[in-house]
Each structure stands twice: as structure tokens, then as C-alpha cells.
Image 1 (cartoon, one colour):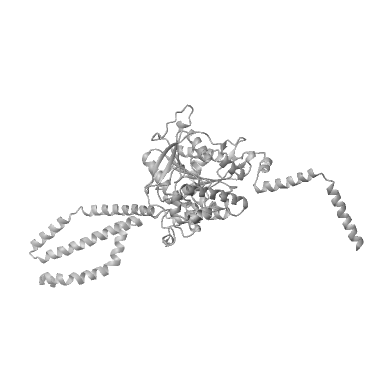
Image 2 (cartoon, one colour; image 1 turned 60 degrees about the horizontal axis):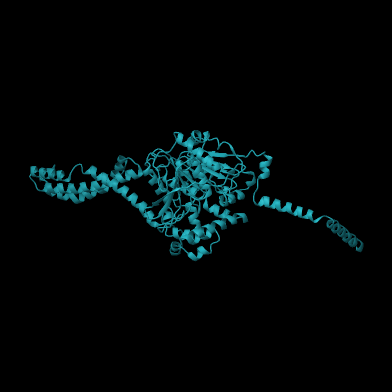
Length: 570
């Protein structure tokens, strides 16, 4: 036993002696290799994959309905969407791309033309315009002047969370779109872009009122100009939700959603799953805190300011601010109701959705593949790499792939016969329009901010019903009441019995009842799109026994007393 122990100990001594003979620089090199491997995996590099594929890039995967006219007539002609995407070699990581975009981005230099737009509730939205003349060589910039051209297409851009028109990726989009000869307007969120909050409404992931109001305003001001909308990140979620809410009753010719979070509840779980995702969670929470500090008087009055200051994640901020201002019962209620995946099946205009499968902020797990495939108006384009809103390409990383894809799609759509034309039809039913939304603990507004705006929507519906009532009244007044009474009095004098006039009064009362009944039937017919004759038949067959018996009891005895005995006997 002692011999075995001594031999084993001597072996270890020999091993340590041999290891001591290895130069220290070799140990440092080995440790560096281990750290590089760990770092490579942690930041999800794909440089070796690109190298082994000889830098051919990854193909763009398209998901669409087999009978999609949008794909056949528009997307099938887009060379970029049928090509491949190769990330900048020294940015071959979704995290490097995303960080580089936010801190550097290499945006083009130009100046916007600002227009301050006031919403119906008193809020202020900064509309930053960029014309093709602003990016042309030798162009003279005229501050604050927005040129009107009835036929030039307009692209409305909805920024992402805490982003405004000064963000690098929006400058890339605005510049290259204006280079195509189109007008671009960045619809900044409330309180961003250097504009103060002037009402008690704050934007959130489901706040569609501002884009709805801005689009309607631009359509009124430019009725002949095609309107396109591009949403990015949270702006893409807002865009898809808006399109699903409006259906075909919308003045938008086409739209593009880039890097949408799709399902906010899944995104919330994803962004707190790994350490690297928690970095983005913390960074975005800091941005939201900065937004709240810019408008502290409003947040202190309407939300939990102490909770906002202590927030270390997006969920914390939503719990102490968004949920309270929006009057949601829980944060999960807010996430469920505002997720655009619930509305994509109701989109009725051409919509291109672009997402990166390695997006470190908006996970691929939330992409509604089946819903996009089931809708003939939606084409989903996914690429293997790209990060969040980055998609840098070229050795100098001077351009964004998705910007080129968006402009190509909109250009092909504009020249096709499949641009959407607004149709005045009822809004589609959304899966969220259930009785649970009218509960005492759920937000009473449709989009989650202020109940007053929801009342405005109800007033619009009420006015619409009132118009229908007035129309029916006009139809009924084509036979004036005075003529009816004159006829009845003439008949009474002809017969020679004053009791006949009482019968005329009874008929007059019955006519008033029938008039109200016809108004009700007209409304019911419009709302349910049923045939008026079917409704009349149902009403008569179901109510006549009761109504006939009641009329006989009320008027039968009077008629017998009034009429001559000979008529009664007959």
C-alpha cells in the first residue's frame, strides 16, 4: 500500500514538473483560445459559417399564401427578396450589428422639415418631412416648408421604442426613400423628437390613434397621393395592429413591418431569459426612464413615479407607468391585448413583414408563421442573420439591407395594379372584441391610453347611426302628416259620423308606431346586412298573434259601438 501511494505521488510530481517546463505564454495562449470560443458563442458570431460558405450569404425565406396576388404580382419581381443577405464580415454577430447601429450607424446627413400636428385630444405630434429635393445635389433647403404634389407617393414611418427621426436607421430609410423621388414623413411618438407632451395621452405598443389620425390627415391633404406606411420594431407592432383594426376601410396603399415583436408576452419572457438579453432589457428600460424624466410632471401625476425611478426592466416600467396610464389590470393584460399577432389575420392591404431569425430583441419564437401564411395580403420575409433593425451589408457597413428591400417592394407595389384602394365597409371583428374587454378591471379604451378617446370613437358610431335615422325619417316624411289627417277628416265628413274621425286618430297612432318600427328595422338591416323583407316576415309571424289580440281587445268594443247595427250584423 505504501509502495502504491509513493509511486502515485511521484507520478503527480513528475506531471507538475513537466507542466512547469511549459512556457507561461503558452498558458496565456490556451486561455485566450478558451475565452475566444466562449465569447464567440456568447455573442452568437457566425463568421466561420460565412467563411465556410465562401461568403455567399443566407437566402431570404418567404412565407405566403399559395394564392397570394401580392406575392405573384409584386414580391415575385423583387430581386432583393429573392436573393441572399450577407452581413458585414466584421459585424458577423447580431449583437455587434445592433450595438453598432445604435452607437454609430453611419447615417447620411440631411435636415428634416418639421411640422407640428395637433391631435383631437390636444396632443402634439412632430411630423418630420424629407423631400426628394432635400437629398438632391445642389438642392436648397427651405426650413419649415412642405411642398404639396398631388401625385408624389408619401411614405409614413412609425419609429421604434424611444426612437425618433434622429435615429440612425430612420435616417437611412428616409434618405434612400427620398432618393427614389418620394416624400417621407417620420411620425414621431408623443413626447419624442424634442416635443413636449401636451395632453394626458402617452404612446405605447398598442397605441394606434396617432397613426390613424396622421394617416387620415395626410390623406385629406393629399387625396391623390398614394400613402404607404413603414413601421419599425414597436412601430411595426403598432402598424400591424392598426391595419388589422381598420381592415379595408383604410387609405393606405401598402405597408411594411420591420422587426416586429409580434407577441409582447413571448417577447417579455425572451428578453429576460439570458444574460445578453437582459442587457437590452436594461438599456431599453433606461431609455424609457429618460423619456419619463423629460415629462416628469405628467408621469408624476398619472403614474407611479417612485416605481418608474426604480425600474430596471421594461416590465417594471410598464407595471408602474404604461399599465396605470392605460388602465390595464396587469402587465400581461397589456401585452396580450396589444400584440400584433392577434391582428395580422385581419390585415386587408398588401403587407411585407421582414424579420431576422437572430434578432436579439424580438425573438423568432413570437413570429406568427401560420397566420401570415393564411392571409393572402401578407408576405413574411425572414433572413438568418441581421440583428435588430441593423442588417448591415458591404465591407464598410455603409448601407442597411432591409432599407433596400423596403424601397424595392414599395416601388414594385406602386407600379402594380394591387395597391389598396380604400373601401367604406364595417371594421372587421378582432379576437379582442369580446365581453372580457368590458370588464371592470380591463382598459376601457380600444388602444390602451385614455378613455376620452374611446368615447370619441363611440361618438363617431353614434353619429353614423343618427345619420341612418335621419335618412329613414326623410323617406317617411315624403307623405306629410297633414295630408293623412286631411284625408281622414274628409272621409269622416263624407260618412257623416264623428266616430270615424276617432278611427282616423287611432290609425294615426298606429302609423306612428309603424314608423318607429320601420326605423328600427332599417337600423337592424344595415347592422346585420339582412334583407328587410326577411326581417318584416320574421317580425309579423312572431308578433302578430300577440299584437292582433291586443288590438282586438283595445279597439274591438269601440268599433262595435260606433258602427251601425247593420254593419255589425253583417
